[in-house]
Length: 147
Image (tube, rainbow, N blue to C red; front, top):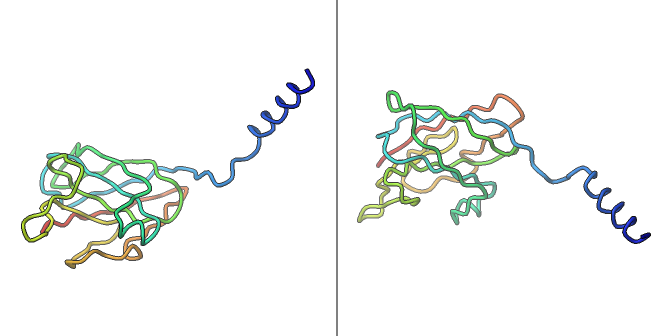
């Protein structure tokens, strides 16, 4: 009887402790522009280190349907952890979950980055498209590029 009371007390104490290291989520408005078509969906990847971006190993992946596309633009609300991240997006027109390339290794589908329009032909650095996601007023603009 004594052992079960102590075990109960330990479990209850653990459950009541504040959860440190657990990130809080907040609403983020993503404003997409320059989309080519309403086919497929948008794939979103969140990156928190340069290494994870180079290796294309997002710590959070999400998918958004291209609903309400007007004049090649639309907005979507998503919930993201508070923190500093780079958001990379793919206009996955054929829904195969990967970037498609042509014979000379140029992307066949659109791509974009958080608050940054990439005009080069090499991959950008994570520092070029980092955004701070805060508790309130998070608007991230993403302009798609097609090559």
